Amino acid sequence: MSDHSSHGSGLAHQFDDLDQQLDATTLGMWLFLAQEIMFFGGLFAAYTIYRNWHPEAFAAASHHLDIKLGGFNTVVLIFSSLTMALGVRAAQMGKNKAVFNYLFATFMLGNVFLVVKAFEYHHKWVEGLIPGPWFRFEGSTDPAVQMFFNLYFAMTGMHALHMIIGGGLLIYFMVQARKNRYHEGYYGPVEIMGLYWHFVDIVWIFLFPLLYLLGLHNS
Amino acid sequence: MSGHVTSKKIYFAVFGALMILTAITVGVATLDLGQLNTVVALAVAGCKATVVIWYFMEVRHARPLTKLTVVGGILWLVIMLILLFTDYISRDWMAGPQAW
Image (cartoon, rainbow over all chains, first blue to last red; front, top):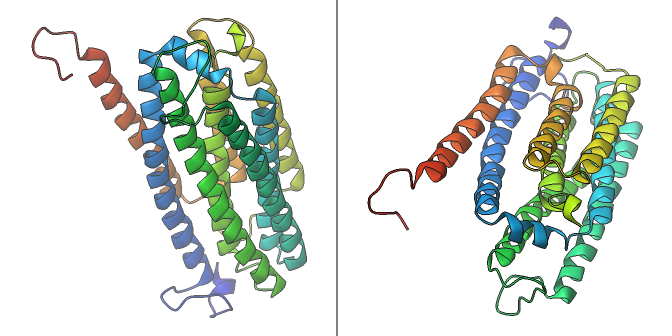
C-alpha cells in the first residue's frame, strides 16, 4: 500500500495514491457495466417475451442462423478474453512488450469475430432475411419470424458495435504500451479495458445459445 | 488491490473450462428436452458468465464494495426481468379491459 504513496507516473491529481486510483476506477467501471447489464437486459427481455408468444416462429427462424459460424465465433471470443486477461497480467508486471503483444492478439481475434459476423450478415442479406418490406422467408408466413430477425440484428448489432468500440480502445492501449506507460503500480487502464472486453464476451455467451442453438434439436 | 498477479495456469484452466461448457451447451441443444432446453442453456451460460466474472475479471480479488456493485448490477437486472415478466404473464388473469 504505502510503497506507492509518492506521486508516481500515471497518478491523477485528485487521488492520494495509485491504489486509491485503481480502486476508484475499478468501481467506476463496474458501475458503468451495471448500466450496460440493464441495457442488454432490456434487449434480452424483449427477446424472451416475443419468443414466449411465438415459440414455433422463433425456432423456425433460428434454423437460418449458422451454428458453425456462431460456435466458431464463440471460441474466438472466449480465446480473446484469455489473451485480454494475459494482457492485464503482463501490465501488472510492467512487461509493456508483452502487454502490446497480448492486446494485439485480442484486437486481431476481435477482428476475426467481426469479419465472420460480416459474412453472416451478408448471407442474411442474400437470403432476404433483413427485416423490412423486402423480407422473404420460405416455410412460414408468421410475422413473428421477422421479429426474430429484428431482435437478432438489434442484439448482435449492438454487440458488434461494442466490439468495434473495444477494438478502437485496444489500439489506444497498444500505443500506450509501446510508450512503456505501464508498471507494477500503474496498470489500471489496462485492467479497465479488460473488464469492458470480458463484459462484451459475457453478452455473447448468452446470445449464442439463445439465438443460434434455439430449436437445434428440431432440425 | 495492486500486486495480485494470477498465475497463467489459472487463466488457461479457466479457458479450458469455458471451452468444455461451450461444448456442453451445443451438445445439450441437439437433444429434445422440451422446456428444459432453455433452462439448461441459460444455466450453462450463467456458469460461463460467473467463471468469466470471478476469474477473468478478477472479482475474486476485488474490494468488498466492488463485489457489492457487481452483485447489485445483477440484482437490478433480476428485479427488472421479474417485474416485466410477471406483468406479461398475469395480464389476462383478470377479466376487464385489455391493454391491447
